[in-house]
Image 1 (cartoon, rainbow, N blue to C red):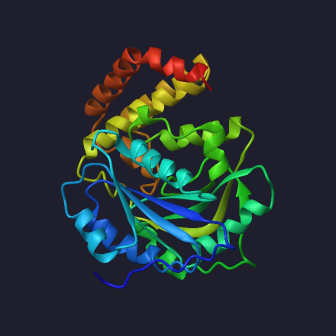
Image 2 (image 1 turned 120 degrees about the horizontal axis):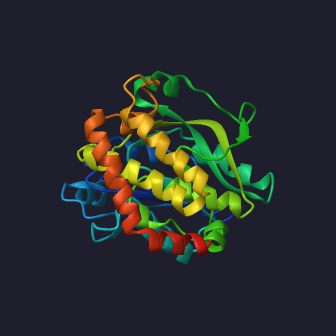
Image 3 (image 1 turned 45 degrees about the horizontal axis):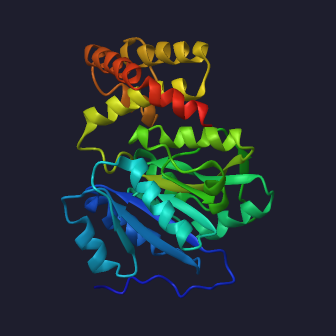
Length: 305
């Protein structure tokens, strides 16, 4: 085992638990973990939650990062289930703040030091995020320089899902992630519930480099399916009938309109336009059937908000 150890905890600082969901992500952990362990904050703990990997992810982390807590899921609970397992562990361990950290990102050394003080600005700030830099623009990440004097914060409706910090108290008030999404869409649902609970969502100009679909790049058809299915489920769970119909129309437009053009660095659009319109028609129809089949549980979740 190499000497990749967490810093000695300074208990005068808020305790941050960094949750890393993982599924066959060894090639991405090889750069994300070294980046994480360069963090210059002195009271953070790392929890990796594995959802049934069959590569050498766990062996790599156990060998190189002995202080990381490794938790294992069955392989059938998806991203949301992995995140929830980590959050429950963090809450039971007395976390003041919880960071959700994708296994395919790189961060600045100051990513915690710069962003944690934002929570002290107002009591209604529930979650704070970062500015996502995609891998095809990675030069922006390496050229980026942010300090306390140049830190910019702005209220938003949603954040880049690859990295954000959340007050532990928020999870106790509004609950954890909805595991029925499995993967994709659970973060937007969480942001919606945050806003409904009276919390502010704040984005900073602190950059995070994101490879994108690090754990799902080998199951691309499934990720496109979940993108369609869960977009519709989110609307059914949280929005009016008019907005549900608009969402369905939007999915058809994004997936099947041959004249629609969007920037290639839009990850959601890229995911939905990965295949030709005929395949997308079947995915959208399948999404409608799935959501009709599960409408009872979706409406139940809606009523429990």
